[in-house]
Image (cartoon, rainbow, N blue to C red; front, top):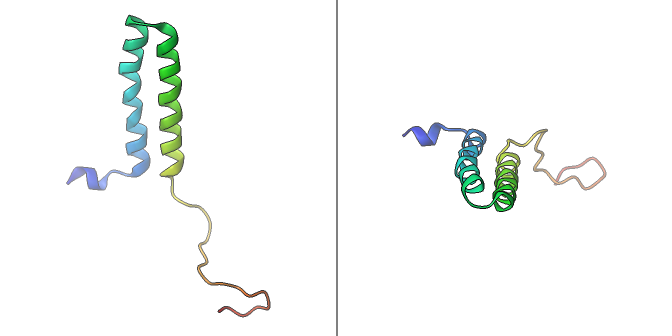
Length: 71
């Protein structure tokens, strides 16, 4: 299936499409409410982008007891 091959960061970026209905809402109803909604959508998209990003650096699962031996 196609959705299984999509990277999580790309899926979070696709959330930017949620801005379109927010802009329509802001233009047709209330400008202030549309602005607040757009900020909320941007915060959610940014949070998902960061949360789904790959971890950086080495991952050492071994416990080091401080004297050079690994338990």
